[in-house]
Length: 322
Image (cartoon, rainbow, N blue to C red; front, side, top):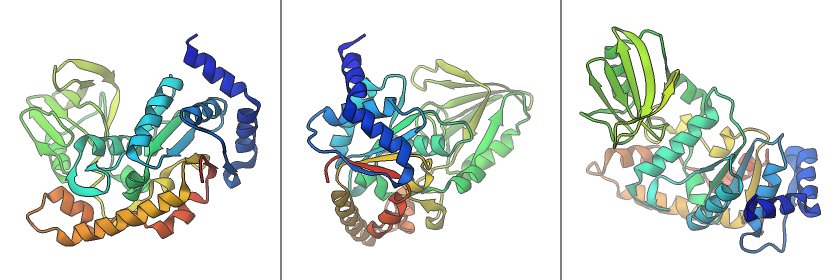
């Protein structure tokens, strides 16, 4: 057993951590707890110890004050919670609260998490690490996303012309070879597509009009990664939906989720700052701007500071600072 595993075991058995886990288990969504006297990596050990000691609570969300802090916590928790799913939920831009340039990789990470939470497959224990600027942007409602999700299954019939029409409607671009989310290519009986909700692109091989194989592959080497029995195609979650089809991330989390909040007032203040910057930026947009940016700011699908209290009220909350 590694030193980290020894330390995590010691934290999990500590009376304070055991008391914390018991309170979270017993009190449910009305729990409001504050931890004091923690510094440095102690926060990560306390969270990891509590998470690993609560089998009945499947989802935890850690709200850090800033992206850099969230990245540190993500790294800590990935090392401590080996075997558990630790996910990063970033904002859509290259710099938080600077709306000039989109970051495709981070947009994919957002789509992956939303697709995972709202998908039909049971979600295992999950820890989501995020920060105010990421929560400022709303996500697609589960019922809307599920209606828009296209399922492809091995052994079923699939019309290539229908696939092309659907992908174009969903904002995909046809290319010779796929290398980033939102692209697809068709060569004979082979359909390659890079979904907005998956880390690797899919390759579908048809025999006549029947799906013979489905697998993921590495676009740089073209080598297969994993064989699948089915796949879900989701549209661009950032730009293909109206404001009334979006909600805050809090509203799609499982009801038993525990919120670990660094500083609630700072979170509210940062949301207000993001709102003011977004309004200023939206006023400067012109028809010459990138279409994705125009779509994101078209309906102002953002989380207003005043909406937060209602959104977080239905979850157990542990405050790590204030």
